[in-house]
Every structure is written in C-alpha cells, then in structure tokens.
Image (spheres, rainbow, N blue to C red):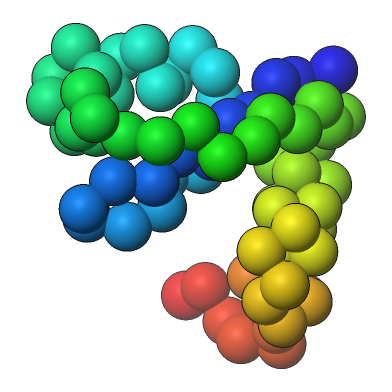
Length: 72
C-alpha cells in the first residue's frame, strides 16, 4: 500500500505521497504553515485519487486513460 496525504495552505490543496510531502516542504513547494487534512492508504494512484475526490466531496475521479481523449 502507498500512503498519500492531503495538505492545505494559501496556495490550495496538495495531494501526493507521504514521501513527496517531505520533499515538497524542503523545496518550499508547500508552506510550513500548511494544515494536514487526511491520509489515505491505497494500492494505486487511481485508487487514492478516487478516495481523495470522495473525501473532498468533488465530482468522481476520472483517470485520464478513461476520458476517451488521445494522449498523442
């Protein structure tokens, strides 16, 4: 399982892996004053994004590969 975290600061919501949050903070890509929102354990990025959208009460997550759009 992969651990993802959601954090909110003045620039919006950051949702990425727990390890990336540490890196983002060291590069000042997320504020030191950011508020922790929640943690999700998921088997894949797609599963994590699906759960993230549910928690945020957003529209259902639709992976780019399911939009019918070409990546060419």
